[in-house]
Image 1 (cartoon, rainbow over the protein chains, first blue to last red):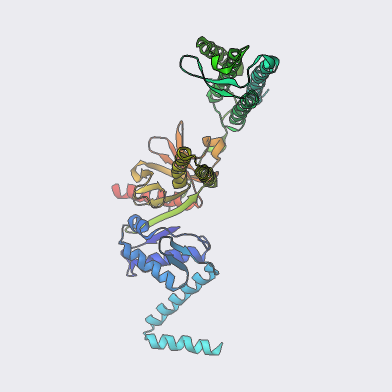
Image 2 (cartoon, rainbow over the protein chains, first blue to last red):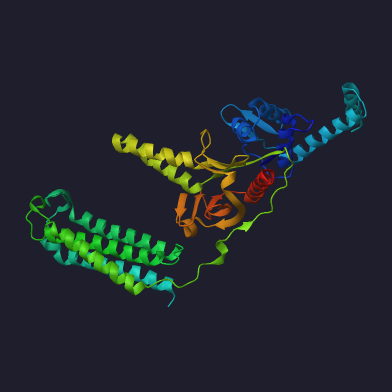
Amino acid sequence: MLFRVDPGSSTPLGDQIAASIRGAIADGRTPAGERLPSARQLAESLGVNVHTVLRGYQQLRDEGLIELRRGRGAVVTGVEPEARARLSAEVRVLVEDARTLGLSDEQILALVRAALTDH
Amino acid sequence: MRWKVRAALIVAVSYVAVTVVLLGTFVSWRDRLPDPMASHFGGGGQADDVMSRAAWFWMSGLVMLLIGAMFLAMTWWGRNHGSHGRVLVSVAVAIGVALASLLTFAQAANLDAASAEEVVMPLWHLGVGAGLALVAGLLCWWITGPDSTPAPEGSTATPEEPLRLGKGEIAVWTRTVGSWALGVVTALTVAVGALLAASGVWVAAVALLLSALPAAALSRLNVTVDRRGLAVAPPGLRRPAKRIGLDEVDTAGVRHVSAFADFGGWGYRVRPGASGVVMRSGQALSVRLRGGKEFVVVVDGAEEAAALLNGLVERRREEGE
């Protein structure tokens, strides 16, 4: 698994780490059941704080892409991880676009809710 | 005749011949041997252990068969360039002759003994066995001859295009590689150890279970490429087992490694001009070191690792200028 982060970018490092993993899951290079490197090991390799890596991992857990288990580390979960990683990435693009338009959180949620009621 | 066929024939024929002599003398002396027989001798040549006659027969046959089969496999499947093969054949035959002659001498020492306790094996028999082994080894060295088959070209690595990295960009590649061979070894060792513990043979059980530890520790390894270079480490260990700094790397590439043919087995392997962590056969990251030597790690996705390693090395060189 390849991680690429740029400390000079305005995107927080934790988000960049999460995006690397999301990309690897989305294009099938990291299949379900694959174990991610331990947060400590990855932090040492990247030269960043362990909490930064953990923030990225927690983001992916909240999206349902990985499971974090004590002692077993982070594992990619089994339910169609490729498609779900792509979906997570699309949602992030949606949020970013909405922010550049100056929409508030409530307005974005209202937009999504409206789309949901139509389906 | 091809060199390999000749070498394999020499090993096979020698082992069959010495085994026929060993078992043949046993059969013809059968009625003159005590039962049990003296099977092991102390420093002064006195018998210090016994074995039933039938067990002796099967044990000697099995030992010769297993060792012969092992050397035959090494001769046939091993990649023995230059003089390696010649040495292998000579050593294999010398060991076969030494073993068979010692076992035959032990049988001879038992000949016409009333009981196993009174059997004495004269120490000069060891010298005769060693002498026979030396003569057989030298003879085989001469008849085997050097292997003139050229080394296959497939063993060179294809270099990978370096990954373009931004100035401040941080990139890390990491992957876990497992070995079914070492996993099976671990499982078998633990199973036999547990069986021995259950039957109360504590010393052997503890020794076996302890020996399973390194096998278990090495059955999974993390391979990492980062700003510091290449590292291979057992999971959970802070210090990597093997580290190659960026400054030591010339170029990185990808090649196919066959564990047995290229490195003679599994694990951390060292060969002239190359060393490597070979957990299984397959695609490997191949690093050409500054000193001209090669270091390989068998791991999936090695192209990405090689590209990143080349990218990191290139960026460091550009920054150094």
